[in-house]
Image 1 (cartoon, helix red, strand yellow):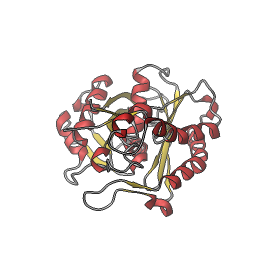
Image 2 (cartoon, rainbow, N blue to C red; image 1 turned 30 degrees about the vertical axis):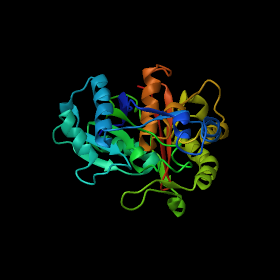
Image 3 (spheres, rainbow, N blue to C red; image 1 turned 180 degrees about the horizontal axis):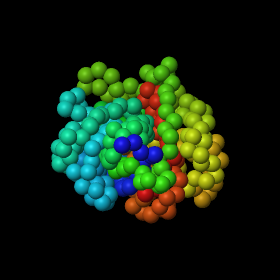
Image 4 (cartoon, rainbow, N blue to C red; image 1 turned 90 degrees about the vertical axis):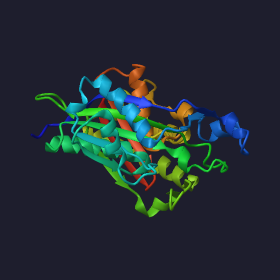
Amino acid sequence: MTAAGSRIVALGHYQPSRIVTNDDLASTIDTNDAWIKDRVGIAARRVADAETVADMATYAAEKALASSGLSAADIDLVAVATCTSIDRCPNVATRVAARLGVTAPAAYDLNTACSGFSYALGTADHAIRAGAARNAIVIGAEKLSDVTDWTDRTTAVLFGDGAGAAVVTAAGEGEEAGIGPVLWGSAPDKGDVLRIEGWQPYIQQEGQVVFRWATTALAPFARETCAKAGVDVSELAAFIPHQANVRIIDGIVKRLGLGPDVVVAKDLVESGNTSAASIPLALSKLVERREVPSGAPVLLFGFGGGLTYAGQVVRCP
């Protein structure tokens, strides 16, 4: 049975307990707290020890499911966005489903790096609209510490680990859709400027190229995302961009002309760049702190490796 749309009904997140501060990094590599904060805005990040990508994804999904009013038996789709799962098979989604006790779901992993959650949310919304699913768990989970060269001062300061999850259900009859149309795309000609290649790889990034692309190309896409949802930028209650760099976020905010009343997520200050986990992690914290009213329009916009981008306007659960 098809549906007119879908909506997020609950969120959850998980972060490892170990905190690595800028001063901790400065004790092992040539950097300092002031330089890191000035360049990217990060003060600390969480780093996993024994936890795997599947572990963190499961913990975040458990929290979201517990808050949703649904049970594992109600879930028929599990989608996980990640670019750091070490195991190629079985995928993370089936492992999460098994641990949650979800039986016979559609289950897939998706890799568009830092835009992954918005891509996965878009595919889940499409599946629900087409009648291929009714209730989904959409997760972004990353263990970037596994692929970070902790001796490289240009990348070691950036990344953290964690997961965020959303329970997505079909909108009821006569109910307004809570997830707007996805706008997605890529700039494949620049795809090699951020890489995790080969066996036992480390992240490599041409930071200035990424910065210039993000600060010049993305604001029009974000504005178009709002237009697709029929929401004017001035109506937004919050903006949750990928948590890559405070200067990138501030640049997009300025180009969008967002007012001072709009809540702008800057979870990277305490979490670092968590790639596909960054948007659901930041959104879950925002909702947990009740910073945005239920039903208010929130713009999600991810961007990163590929170079890919994706976004949608959602109604705050």
